Image (cartoon, rainbow, N blue to C red; front, side, top):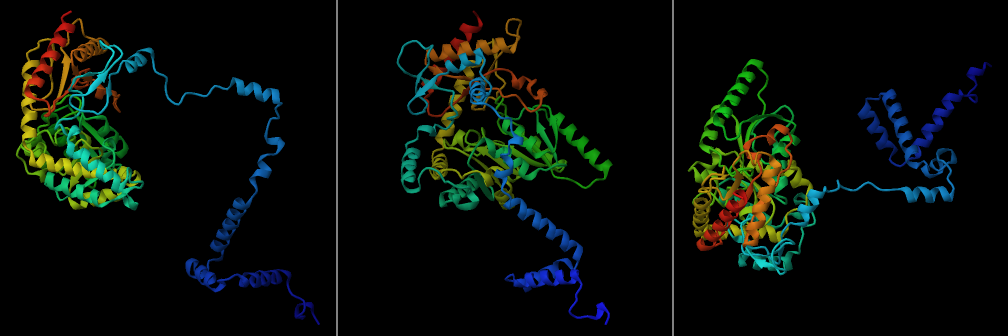
Length: 516
């Protein structure tokens, strides 16, 4: 009988295959796995084999005892105890941040310190002030435009909410960080700004820098004012869009740029991308107010969307503080997205974006700061609601603010050694030294402004220089808006007599320093 016909003698390969098949059948769920492989890979044996090899390799890598192989003597230089001690003694870790220069350290050591609660009349001390005890001064350095920092209603609600909800939310809004107070403040903000919906972020700075990249991606077009603040610049940078800059507050430059982009789009015949105009209501850098009617006209003409940062205009401009659309008597829907900081006029924390329901909903899953940051503390959310109600029922706050702005401007505009680029209606007033041969350099201007700041504080008025952060592009720091300045923040809580007193002290300090 031939060997091939003997049933007791089998091919070794066939026997091994049967052994593997019998072993595989022992695994629980064998039939399910077999059906899955057959349906997923259409009985493709090569693909199944490759994935099996990868699976085995992954299991081997996970189960491998790394400690046994990684501590072999051949992988390390053997050192004596003396050598180890010597290396430890010589080790000097790098600093966590860049060390301050002597000038920066002197500036830091000389900063005024508010003792106690922040307010329009705080107790302040500084190492160079006359006297040894803290003194009460008039505060024109804090963004307390509406005077709500010291409003008793906000303090009362904060204490109540602290006992009921605790301090922090301990979770992003998309998990369990959202409370009924967060939903209430979003509804209140939408109603106040006359928009379909609103969303609140837990940090003011990261609001605009999250909103921009949530809607603008690589290949999209953004046209931005060259004087926008650093938070907007970071948002533009994160979006990776094609960013084009027009001259600060120059509507002819904006129109020319929009026309050029439209012509380029028509010539290229490429699919139309998302296109935005990004600007501020009141510019943080110099206190000027955007020409919103003209911007709206241009964005409608050239088919762009408008994103407006109203951090310093909501709560300060308009008959009821509703910002630039109310100030210019425009339909709020002409502005596609309104973004703002709740710390300025509402005396709380965080930021907001108000727009259509679709725009708000999109941010709940695409706004990076909203998705990955803990939600705003509940007492801050409710504090914003209380602040909004106070602003709605006390319109006299805005009238007092505008009166105090006029008092400050009437005194300071008469000083011929300074220039004020800020708009006459802006609560944010920037005082710059008029350029001349004596004060031509930025360093000398900063030094003189520092002397004015110290002299005014010694006489009872707290001011501050406008901080400067290097822009994302060097040319953005070359305009007149980037010059050193004293920043004055008008407030409604000071009386007219106190505001006049503060203005006279500032004027006298300027004259004393610049005419010496």
